[in-house]
Amino acid sequence: MRIGESSWVWQRYGVSIDGTRYAHGVTVHGESSVTIDLNRECSAYRALVGADDMNLMLGKFYFSVYADGVRLWRSGMIKGGDPAVPVQVDLTGRRTVRLVVEPHSHFDKLLLADWAESKFSCR
Image (cartoon, rainbow, N blue to C red; front, side, top):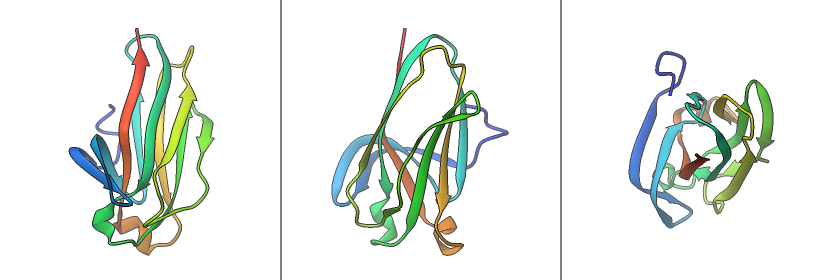
């Protein structure tokens, strides 16, 4: 992860989205960008995204996955209390990944968004 170019990140166990607990995940603020340099050949990225339950059903976000500067996936609006949305993108031949969360409003910037069960498939 590019520390200097990335937003605040909280790697944690027991991430919870819409009452469902996941073993692990990454929690970020409602406006965030996290860049990861792939240090080997990777074929895919998978996660379950949503508003963290600590927000008490608040928050509206859009999640995106970029690779080498190209957006490969974007969610619709995800609200607090919505079930987690699965993400799966092909990373064949890619060198960098950027995970982005955009807030729906200024208030949403302060809330927490999750990339639960976040996994790269690499050799």
